[in-house]
Amino acid sequence: MVALQFFSPFSSTPTKYPTFPNSNFTPLSKSLQFNNTNFKILSLKCLTCKKTQSLSFICKGLKDETQKILEVDGGGGGGGDGGGDGGGEDDEKVEKGNGVLPEWLNVSSDDAKTVFAAIAISLAFRSFVAEPRFIPSLSMYPTFDVGDRIVAEKVSYYFRKPCPNDIVIFKSPPVLQEVGYRDDDVFIKRIVAKEGDIVEVHEGKLIVNGVARNEDFINGPPNYEMTPVRVPENSVFVMGDNRNNSYDSHVWGALPAKNILGRSIFRYWPPYRIGGTVLPEGCAVDNKQESGLTTPQ
Image (cartoon, rainbow, N blue to C red; front, side, top):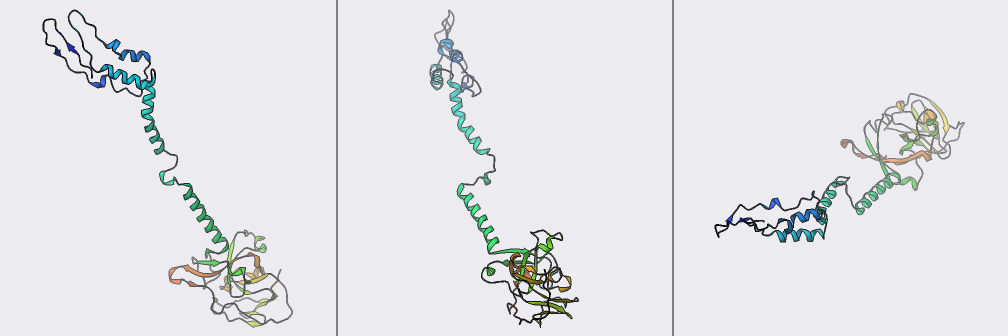
């Protein structure tokens, strides 16, 4: 604080004038840049009041303040540095608060590793163990309705071949790709015969190796005829449970076993239809019968 006192030549008692507020001299604004000349303006040499005939001035506290400023400055131009040092922490705080990503997206390396591991495990599980599927059509009605959701497992076919009565999901075979389907289109049907079996449809009955199948799970007896055919090696014969509304092997031929992706084992949606999708009797077994046959290509 700088106090100015007025001394009258006619009185020995000094008269106090109002005290000037500190804001006129300190603090220094960070935006102001001072050089040596500026500091000289604040120094005692410039502000020391010289005695005149009629009055004199006394300056208090300015010397200490000037020294403090000069010490921070380091001898010249340091006011800017001091201000810079003082504001550096604020700048750092602002930078931390204004990151490119939201705070909830800033994850550590451990978090990233956990996320990537979870994704990898999920993809591996879907590729090699099981995957969910959605039923888009009525070709398997009444076993599956439109909108049903199932789980198809992929483990059992590592240890055994697909067999009759298995409900399988599969990629479109080459014969379907030739008529416009894509390689990644997936279908669901029931295997009715395996490689080497003789299959035919006659008088509303599916006949495999000369034995008529008892199929109480289909929507109705087929209203078409199919001459006997032998299922090629490494292939299976698939049909929809909705026999009269299914685009299956009786139209386009046998399915290569390598196109099978998995076997349906469980329906988890809708809730009132939750349950297994594997027949209690398991794989169907038929006695083979030789006769005049044609082999589908």
